[in-house]
Figure 1 (tube, rainbow, N blue to C red):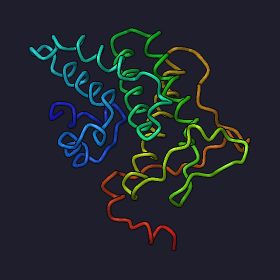
Figure 2: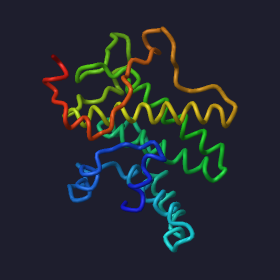
Figure 3: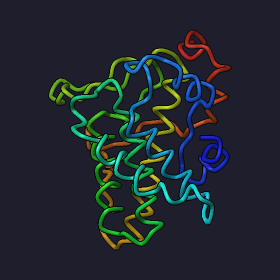
Figure 4: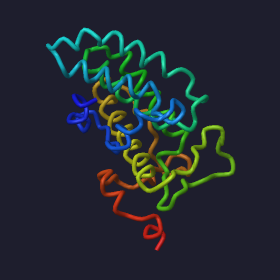
Length: 205
């Protein structure tokens, strides 16, 4: 993890570093999803080239892809799954494995839209529509930092999707139009540290 963290912004990942580290000591149910952690370890091995850790790339790649599983079973950790899919997509694209990179990029974008990360409102809740499939609804964020991670995750997906579209010469997966389901209303992200300094009460005033 210490190898990866200084390079996390190159992968578009902005998380609360303290909470990520602390999660390693929590119970299994409270830890970050194994798909995300193994994707992080995969990138650490990749970044360590030509060091000895690089020999473990196949191991962590296998663990990360296996851990993705069925995202509908882990709605409480959907953000972790989206972040993991982005990291895997960038890993594959960086290694010239374009089909796999495109697959995981599209999967991240699709799940992000289903979770309505493209419409995170100014308060604690996302915009809601009566006809929207609620099976993908995320639980309300516990605090402003968690809300900030959701905002940052959406823009991580957006940037990856648009870059993959150009690189692979295919249409973008994320919609962006005036339709109520497709319009992007999520604000531009701040640094995660900035969300710690803004109280929920202040955001509603």
